[in-house]
Length: 367
Image (tube, rainbow, N blue to C red; front, side, top):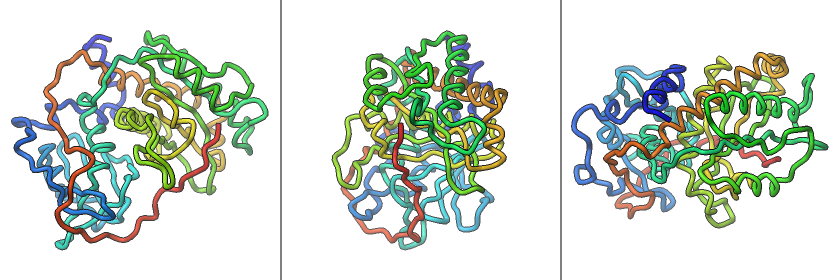
């Protein structure tokens, strides 16, 4: 895909464009080199190394925000991007999109916010600098997985069930991506059941691919809006790290783009981006995201989800996000990479915790 076309795609929506600022926007002066920044951990909690948020501010050449939206929060920003930390220990918001951190935010003895090294490497840097991702490659195939099917109809309570809605969005998405010159593959093209194993095996046949699995959420009646999940790069509570987790940084960049685009269409921020241990994602050999299009249990949103016009808008938003991600995933541009800290480092002093996070509810995966 040409650089000119990438620029056009990046301007399709403000929401998506703000996800991926070029590196010269984020570092307007001379680039920060590895030698200019000390990556020695500022503290630890439960053997997890942490960095001062002010170190991120220096690295990305950001300023302290004059005002913050929430009392007790700390915000670093420039004219194009903002990172807001706190006041709760699970409050991390990047340009209006909530990111559920892998580890809680903590404060040092002076009350200054600190963020885990894992969250910097696995969430923040892929979103801030997607063209610096390790392992960038041309996106040759987009695999679109319509969740459920056959005897498994998914979320109920709407005029149409989840299985049918996800298939219709998948078909619209396929049309839009192929119109833009992308090769696509649907894991299912009708109302029939596929096991997770079948979906994964079909997807893993394609090199240089990304995987999008579509679902409709359910929950409290007041909850609405899109949510996007990636496989956690951390091992599950009782298990070993999965090979698929190596794709987490690229999955994070893709998830953020999709969430921005869908939130713009839905008109609400939604639940943001989170991490899960869903078995479907754990065996995929490519960047992958789990997309919740909205809530079947919200009366207003369920009424929209059953309309063809709204489903087409959702498909169009995802297509735009995929196209933007594909531009930044391309290795065509040779960039000088400012190296962020490695995920693991020896901590040197203790940190105190902020109030315990409520966390993000981990739902049991489903096909």
